[in-house]
Each structure stands twice: as C-alpha cells, then as structure tokens.
Image (tube, rainbow, N blue to C red; front, side, top):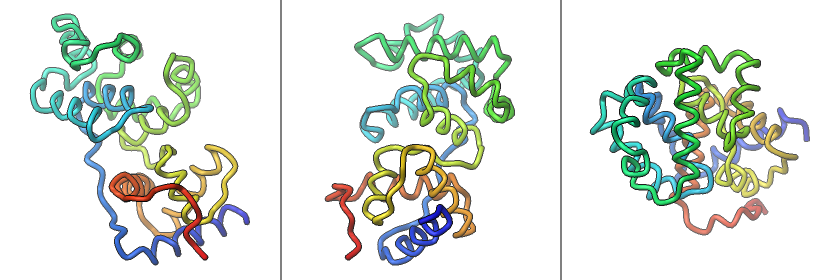
Length: 211
C-alpha cells in the first residue's frame, strides 16, 4: 500500500472509532523553560505522572523562565535537580547544555525556535546534541507551533491496531501527516489526539484490531 492508501485507511479506521475525540494540544506554552523541559524529559518516561507535573510547575511558578535566557538565569540560582525534583544527573545535564546552546543561537522564544527549526542546517546541529533524535526534534517542532507529528510507541501501536504496516519512523510520520491532510485537520492536532486516545486506553497491545 502506498502512503496515500495507508492514510485513507487510517482516516477510515479513526472514523469508525466511537470513542475517538479530537483534542487540541496545550502548546505552544509561550514559556521556553516549559518547552525545553517537556521535550527533554519525555523520552522513555510516563508523561502524565512524571513530565506533565514538572512542566506545569514551571509554567505556574516561574514566569521569569518564559525566555531561554530567563530560564538560564533561574538555573544559575536554583540547582536544576532541585528545581525539577530529579535524582539522577543525565537529563538535567542535557537540559542545561541545550539551554546554553539555545542562548548562544539567539533563541529566546518559541517563535524564534520555530523559525530556527525550519532551517535544515539547524536541524543537523540539534541532532548532534546528546539525547536528541528524530522524535525529540519533531516534538520541538510541535511545541514551537510547526505542524507535524512526533512518532512514539503510542502512535506506532495505533497504526498497528489499524492494521497499517510502516517501515520505520519516517514512514510512520508520513502516514500520520498525510492522514491529517486527508481529514483536513492540523497535523499536531491529529498526533495529540491519537496520543491522548492511546495513553488513556486499556489493552493497548498494538495488535491488529481489524478482522
């Protein structure tokens, strides 16, 4: 099946799910401290219980971290592990390095990050930073307002349940994005809606559900 056929099949599958709802994402946050923390903490962790509470605390308690340099100034006053209530050093150190990198690149707000991410040369720079891969790059795009999807296990399981086989990350993203175009909705909206549906759904074993 070519991508267009897969997109049409996925749209049909979604249309037949009685409990599937389109859910608008809460980002862009207009708060670079929250944006950076969200993107850098999320790989491999439970978003609802681990990442989201920390992002919300930054949004609510630290308005001074709205810009990247403001976030950096906060991190010079408060140890990042204390700020994030974090035990190990790996992800906090990644955040520190990325904040410093963004400041040097002149990225202070999500609007600037969005423009910066539209340049492939900058994507290559970001890809060279430890802990950042395709999914995190795409997630940064979404957090800054660029319409795309960021493929994780929930989206892969959703494709599997729709009996749609994809060969790797790039094809999965292409199918999700094409499906959004076919449905005439924003790509980030579809990504987030699938993620919400799968993250709150029981029995998500990723097996084909169409017989």
